[in-house]
Each structure stands twice: as C-alpha cells, then as structure tokens.
Image (tube, rainbow, N blue to C red; front, top):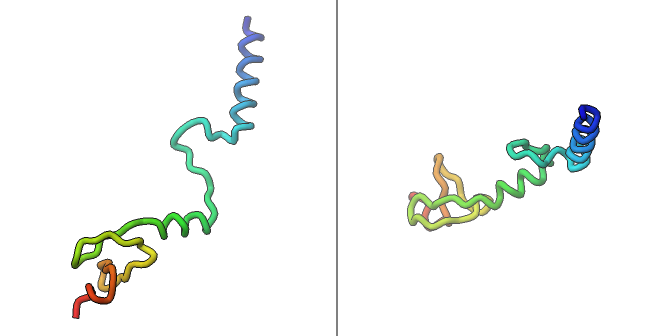
Length: 75
C-alpha cells in the first residue's frame, strides 16, 4: 500500500518537474529584459490635461505627469 503511494507520488512529482513547475499559481518565472520592456511599453497611462489614454512608451513624461502630445503640455 505504501509502496503504491510512493510510486504514484514520484510519478506526479516527475510530471510536475517536466511541466516546469508552472502548474501551481503564484510562481513567477524569470523573464528576459526584452519581455519586461515590451510589457512596459504596452501599459496605458492617462494624459493629465485631456484625460485620454496613451501607450506609456509614446507618452511624454513632464514634471511627474504623463501627457499625450505637445499640445497638452503646460506652457
């Protein structure tokens, strides 16, 4: 009886390891720097003046706030 449980447990552990340990939620995998930059570029931010949303990569960051274009920048 114990031997059967031990063998089944070993098989389940081996399958878990083959799957890369990604079966359980909450475990973050090591991402490359490129992947992190791509994710950051897809983040939307709100323009401080006109309240439109723009991709963070294309937004203008000025004095701690994001703006969608030069027209919205304070003068």
